[in-house]
Length: 355
Image 1 (cartoon, rainbow, N blue to C red):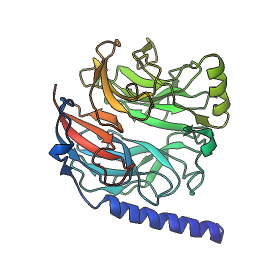
Image 2: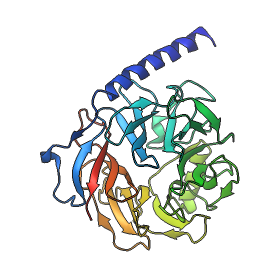
Image 3: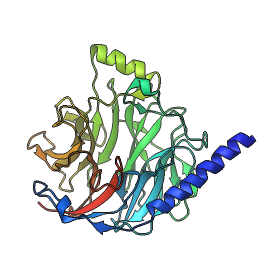
Image 4: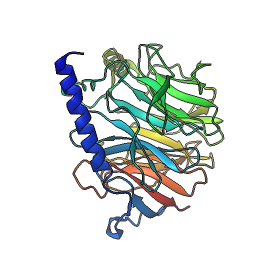
């Protein structure tokens, strides 16, 4: 390793340590009463668990006692993976502090899987060209790994394709993983056993398929997808050749865990993402910008799995998303811009869920 690269990595690791200290400054605190919106009738006793930076995709362990999440603090170039209790205590860096990481999820044994570029290159990958507008990068160096949640040591790689592999989540039954991959040339959903074997392709239509989660009984999968046609398909494929997608139009779909019986349950032509099953298996909560003409404000909504009964859940004027229920349905985890210390901060919250 040359001296310049060593210096860059040393600076990056120092910034990671500083950002970690910022993240650990507080455990949790109740959301001030003046920050409540009476229209958010399903929320009670909201508590804030993080207090600075961009924190997102906070997902529960199998016993509902821990959360894994990705965080990028001021001065960081790339997200890293952390864990904490559902009370916001004992925050700990899980990933190495190198490369870019995303999409962490607890395994039944308490270890954590996530996607990282660090095995290919320890330096944070270059972000997309701003001239492309708002796009998501699909770094081909992403691979899914399993890490020891006690010390962060990577135990094994689950994927080794020379393409994008990420967005992995685990069935609550504890038997299979669903993940997103570009191994076929398009962005499709796959499932596999917990050791990475027995890979099955679940989707096979032109367009992005990703962000998938299992129902509590493991029998169904909910996911976000685009189905571009005509010139939109040409634009999609052009960006895909650059390992990019533009998430302007994503709809929510439900299918059986083996990929059969796919059903589209939203049809608003907007950016719908981060779907998650309510524990009753009859409803899906998700984030969408459907009520903002400018497309900037995301709120959470709930809909029946047959596409009926759409209900708006949050009303904050900026971002609410990444919802996840505890197994008993009594609490909800979500991420939001509300009660920010700094403009643009996104933090993790927990609330009692009221039917």
